[in-house]
Length: 183
Image (tube, rainbow, N blue to C red; front, top):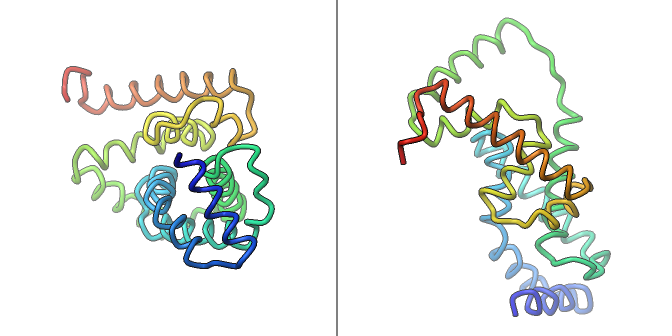
């Protein structure tokens, strides 16, 4: 029923330029998309908001290209995935003394924030594609087949990324005082 409602809203946007219909889609998906970016950026809420906004702008401007070959949410996550990787490719990885000092101070502050921040720190140990797969599967509940559509990776590769990501997260968390018996 939800997929049918999404298709109806998309049709209203395409056929009648109904911005209220698109607003409903934004309201439905803004939290999951923002949460996806929050996990991808390891807790950077301002960047997450900017990337989410870019995702919805791109979705609105390209909504006529939605062909209903997958669910609207899969199509939207694919856009989010591409927005994130465009951001990663565009940023310059220049390291100077000032940015090193800021990063060190930021990391120190993060470690004092508790479990949630520990999760973000552990996510930083993953490669971007592993982080994407882990975030979508474990935190957003997206199926392996849909993750494969979003990332363009075969399902077996997605499973490998999940396995390696889970192992890296477990190792990091164990090294930082989480022995697996805590909840």
